[in-house]
Amino acid sequence: MNETLVIKEIKDGMKGLFTKKRLVNGMKVLELDGNYFPYPTRTSIQIGDQHLEHYEGGHVNHHCDPNTKVIVPNFTSPFLVAIKTIEPKEEITFDYESTEEELVSPFKCECHGKLIVGYNVFQRV
Image 1 (cartoon, rainbow, N blue to C red):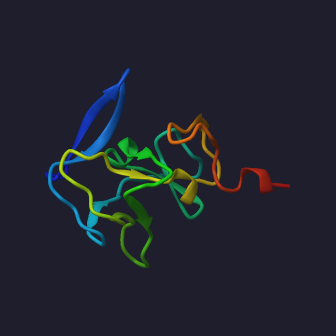
Image 2: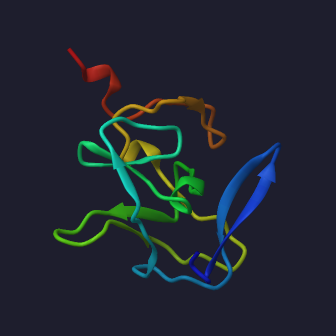
C-alpha cells in the first residue's frame, strides 16, 4: 500500500481513500495497477473498454467536484493525478462519470442528489 494514502471508514461500513500528506495540483496520487476484466464491477475503474480492479483505487469515492482525475498514458499504467491541492486527512475523489460508461451500482450523489449512472448509458441503441 502507498505510504502516503490510507483507507478509512467514513460511515456505515463505507470506506474512502485519504491522504496523509499535502498533495499539489499535477502530482501523481496513485498508480493504478491490478487485474483487468471485460465487465464492470462495483469497485472497478473503466480504462478504455476494460475494467481495472485495484485495491486502493476501489476505495476512491465519487465527487462531482473531485480533487483527482484518471490519466491513461500510452504504454504505462493509468494513475490518479491531483487537479487541485489536497490537504492532509482529505478524502481522495474522482468523478465516476468521467470514466464509467455504465455503473454496476448506480447511486444518488451526496453532492446534489443526482443519480450517477455513467456517462453513456442513455446513448445505447
